[in-house]
Image (cartoon, rainbow, N blue to C red; front, side):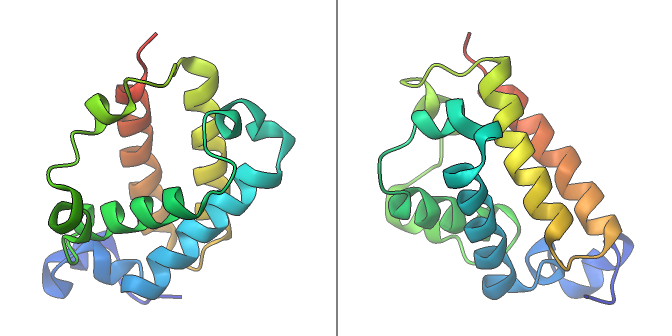
Length: 135
C-alpha cells in the first residue's frame, strides 16, 4: 500500500505517483476490464465494446496515464481525448454509466491504493462517467 495521502499529492507531483505509476494504473485497468468481461453486472456495458478488449485496455491506460499527471500517452498518439465526442457513437444511459462505475469501483476496492486515493478516484470517475451519458 502506498504510504501517502491526497494531501501529499503536490509533494509527489501527481495522482500518477499515488496510484503506483504505470504498474498501478495497468493493474487497475486490467482488473476493470476483467470484471467487465466476466461479471453479469456489466453485461450491457460489455456489449458496447469490441469482442477483444485489448484496444480498450490500452486506450484507457494511456488516457489515465496523462489524466493522472503521468506521461500524456493518449494525447501523443491520438490527440486531445475529447471524451464525450468519442463516446457519442455509443448509447450511454444510466444503466451503462452505473455498470461502468460498478466495474471501476470494484477494481478500486480491490486495489492496493490508500483509502483516500480510492475515495478521490471514485468521486472523479463518477463525475466523468455521468458526463458521458448521452441519452
